[in-house]
Length: 322
Image 1 (spheres, rainbow, N blue to C red):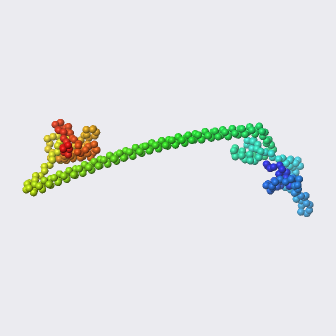
Image 2: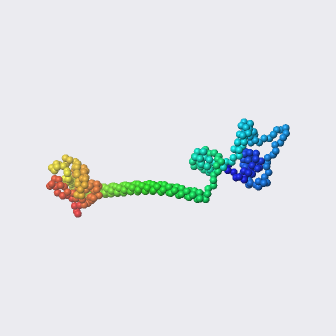
Image 3: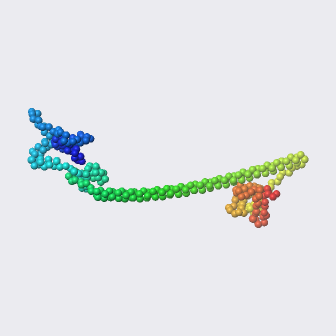
């Protein structure tokens, strides 16, 4: 059972050799106590008293008597002999391995999953120094191989994790660059729209200023004529020159209250198309064009009419003094 020999002898002597169960009980009761000198240990076995109360018989002796009654003296002797045989090892019934104690057997059961064990009388011989060295060398070699295999697995996992991290970093950089490009385009578009709005606002303000100047000049001239007793003639409506791509010449402007214009820039690109009143001036055309593109200045822009061919080059009214 794995108990020390001296402790077993102490238990047998203390119980008076009454059998296995009393010895086991004694060992378990005195498990933590040191083993005393066996010569000083007295047997606790007492003589069987005689009297009217009957004989006190030990359990093992009762079993022996029962065996003798059923099988005879030979069977009882064999059973007693088998009980006296000491188990020296534990054997795995599934793989046949022999273990010195229960700790090694439990370790084998955890590793292999085997659960069938039995006591064996075979003694596990102690290892020699050469065998110990050989087993130690084998154990070190197996441990080194396990460490190497584990290191390879960890290296592969680290490489895979690094690849995933780099791929995620590249994707993040691409996404960041795309967002930055979109922001730049949005800012450029916003600035362009702001400039166009500013140009339109400036053109409208200038047109209003010119209209106010003209109205004040006419008012001053009318008041002067009244003071001098003269009749102030009403200003005739300005006649707009024929714009490019306008209706054919020879048709009266009063018959067409609006004129559709198509303007092409000297730098090329898509033409600008609009519809103005037939009596609109080139100033109004220039203001419309300045509101569409920043490359046009109302004060310096010039117009040229290529159809019909006899048309002459015209300049804006506001740039006549340049």
